[in-house]
Image (cartoon, rainbow, N blue to C red; front, side, top):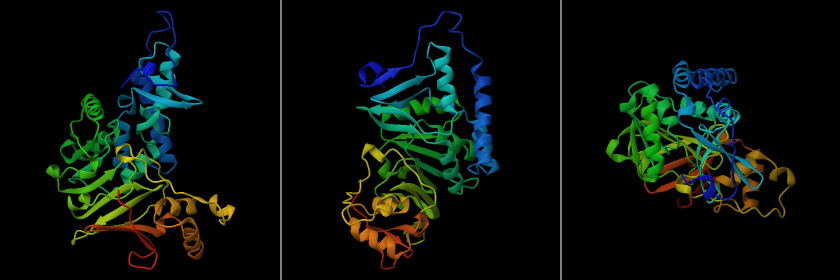
Length: 343
């Protein structure tokens, strides 16, 4: 990672303090206190209900995986870091780590390219993955390594493979995982290819936004496997069937992730002409626009949405079969389906 002096708009929160001021507090105990508070919050809000995943969150400290992160401000970002010379700066870093918020951890030309996802969303996704003991999981998008550590705690190192394109990201994640006592397979490679040499898998989870589901992923799965991935502004959960087809619906949860390989999903080109204002402000209509971007004109999308009674995310789904892929409303073989644009 380049130093903040090499990135426009980065402001360091470090300050000059005397020897007494620079003494570190008991970080492990303070971190444990904050971590326990975060877990209690996630449980109270219903994001963390499975005892096995609660144990994983309690035993896997987030601060080991996020030694620095960037907080947006007008004109750029402020960097918070674990080695800030100012005790107040270190406290801001640590308390921010244990807030239920996503944290930008890497920038490229001032744009976020890697992050630590919001803990409540991570908890819900891990629970929605529906893992059982002995299952093999492939994670696409290693990021900080925290999600891989949670998986490794739950399933064991030998059952977890995580892939990221950036060798610096995988090197840092491997080191952080080892510091936390975990050694899953950390692979540097193109996430769209998956990792066939480590398959077959019972579960695939992506922690980066997709335009389409790479067709190679279901091929690396055992029949009955579950694939959970962000698309548009939602999370699609696919089941891999005996014929190699993968099919499933979106979950109710909204989700916003850094794009896979740094290429943003297409933004819908919205011409507001003729579209009612209430539709343009409606989250469910925005989801349909993002889901069918470049395949369905906004006016046509509005007619589908209006006719279907303003459907929520859970009525939409995705099918991957052979070389074909399509999104659909209510029925994968019904009239409202749209071939997926190339990924």
